[in-house]
Length: 307
Length: 306
Image 1: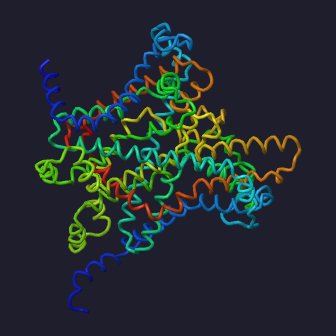
Image 2: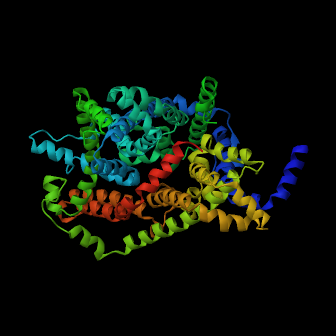
Image 3: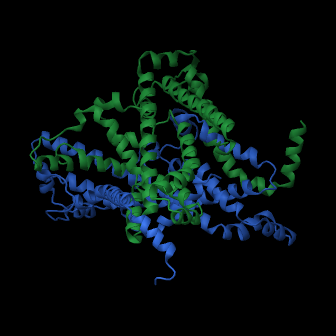
C-alpha cells in the first residue's frame, strides 16, 4: 500500500517523464507481455472457434505428444548442437581475425579487408539464400562448375545431409565474424597503447604480447558473449535456417531446429497446442539456464554477470 | 636519423625475428583470404546478373561475366511495376519505422538514463525481461492476427521492429554522457521536461541518433520475416520478401518449363534472380562505405554493455 502511495507521489511529481516512457512501455506490454498469456495454450487443446480462453485444458498432453513422437528430442539436440558449434566457430574466428587485424600495419590493406569482412552483416538472409543457390545448386552452381572444369563429378549437396551442419556453420561464421571481430577489436584497442609499446620495447615478441596483453583484454568480452549465447541455447536463428535449408524435407533430420519446426507446424499442421508447448519449453529452459549461469558467474566474479 | 631511434630500432628488430615474420605472413594471408571469401558471393551475384542466360545454363555461375548481357535487367525494367511498388513499401516502412523507433528509443533511454528518476531500475528490468522470456512465435502470431487485426497491415512490420532493448541500452550510454548540470540549469531557467528533451537533449544525442537510426533502418530494410508471416497482399510486399518470392517462383517456373520441354535458356531465371538480388541490395552496397563507421561505433558501445 505504502509502495503504491510512493509510486503515486512520484508519478505526480514526474508526470512528464512517465509520459515519455509510456509509448515504449505500452508497446512492450502489448507486443511482448500480453502475448505471453497465450502460452496457456500449451496446456490446452486449441480450437479456432473457441479461441484461446474457450479451448479445453488437456494437461501435459501437448508436451507428451511433442516428445513421444521423438521430434521434441531431435529438434532440442539439433538446436543445442548448432548453437554450440556456431558459438565456438564464429567466436574463435572472430578472435583470431581481431588479433590479426589489430596487428596489421599496412593502412589500406587493413581498411579494405576489414570493410569486406564486415560486409556480410549488412545483407538480409534472403540474399544469403541466393548465395547458397549460386554456389551450391546442382545445375549451375559455382562449386559444380569448378568440379566439372576439373573433370570431377557434379556433387549434389541436397543428397548429403551430413554435410549441412558444416555448411550452416560456415555461413553463420561468414555472416557474423565481421560483426564479432568489431567487438573484439574494440576490446583489444580499448587498452592503453602504451602498454603494447612498453611490452615491445621490453622485448616481448608478438606471441607474448598476444598471450599476456591481448587475450586478457578480451576475456571479459568473451565471457559476456558466451553468457549472451548461453541464454539463447534453445533458440535457433530461424532466418538463417529457413533461408539456407529452405523446404528440403530430406534435410530436416539434420537441420531442423525448434524455431523452424514451430514455424512449419504453425503454417501447416495447425497443431497449435503442441507448437505452443514447444515454444514454452524453449522459453522456460532458456530462462532457467541464463538465470542459473548468471548466478554462478556472479558468485565467481560479479563484474562479469549480465544482470 | 641515428640519434633518436633506439626504441624504434628495438621494435623493428623484434618484428623481424623469424617467428614474428611467420606470424605476420599468416596474419596478412588469413585476413586477406577471409576478405576474399566475404567478397566472392557478391561477385557471383553481380556477374551472374550480367551474364547471358544461355551461358549460365551450360557453364554455371562465375565470378566474372564471361558472356556479357543486360537482358535480365531489361526484363526487370520492362515491367518495373512490382519492383517499384516493393521499393515504395520498403522505403515507407524504413522511414516511418526508423523515425518512430528513434523517438521511442531516445525518449525511453533519456528517462531511464536520468539518475534522479527513481524507478529507472524497475522499468529497465521490465524491458530487459522480454529478452529473457517471451511468448514465442505462435502466441505472437495468433495475437497479431486475431486480436490486433494486423493481417496485411504494414504495421505488422513496423511495430515489432520499433523498440529493441539493445538499441535502448546503446542510446542510454549516449544519454549518460550528457552532463546533468545542463538539465539542472535548464530546469532553473524554467524549462519543462518536454522542452528540455526536445531542445537540449535531442540535439546533443545526434551521434546516438545517427547510430541507432542506422541500426533501425538496416533492420527494416532487410526485414522479410514479418512480411512472410503477416502480409498476403502482393502489393504490400517489401523488397526483400518480394525478392524471396521471385526466387521461389523462378525456381518453380524453370521446373515447369523443363517438364514441359521448353528450353530453359529461354526463361532467364538464373540471371534474373541475380539481377533482382542486385536491385534489392544495391542501396545497401552503395551507402555501406559511408555508414560503416557508425555501425562500428554502435557495436563498440553495445559491447561495453549499458
